[in-house]
Length: 295
Image (cartoon, rainbow, N blue to C red; front, top):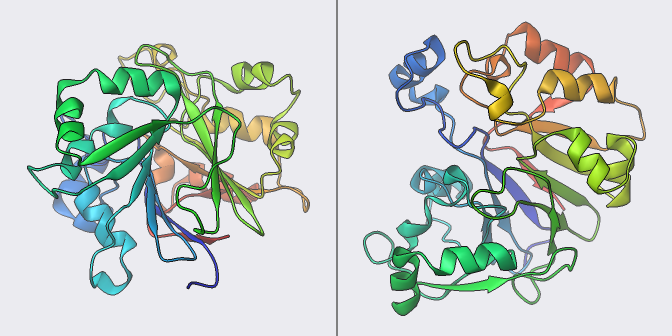
């Protein structure tokens, strides 16, 4: 038995990762040349007190992320459950690797919202994996905490978040431990929509509503002028710049807040950038792959 639950950040990038396909920007080119600069789509690995292994989001870079998760690269951690916030590409495209063409696992439990389960169930590749008993898909009601494995030492709670719904609905996931609650919210349309949905006036009240001690939140873009030639308003996310304006400086009683789901264009990806320094000067953080949070 482990003494505590550990949550490892396995990816911090937006769905396309870094380097992103079709991009020749300096950051992506450098990531092609230097493996250490690569960043994988957002994902978390959770090790229960009973030694059971659980991941949130299942990405195209599952192979590399299992290596990040496994101590010293020894016998690889293999997920027993998968929880998915929504069905946009980067959050679910690795699910096929659980099946016969790659890992050939048995009875991996997949948790997501009722609406998203119905949509996923209708995919032909998912039907095949269910027929082969690679995966078993379960819907979970919003706001009802559940143990992904009895005795794992933590519970998960799906909460609805306003975000583009062309492929189903979107959740954030709260990881509830004995000493700490962690919010994983990689996607939302805007703080206004989220706060209005929960009838809260500000981000602090929203986090307090769920007793959040640490929040991993949507930091896709730094600013709205980040992608010349593309209308970012059609890819709705709150910018980090706007989030910091709403938050101001961190106060002693505030939860920890880290930004992830970073697009390849986001300057906070660079350790020495002035934008990253603004985040840190205000007392907030940028998530890094390999970071471990204890519950």
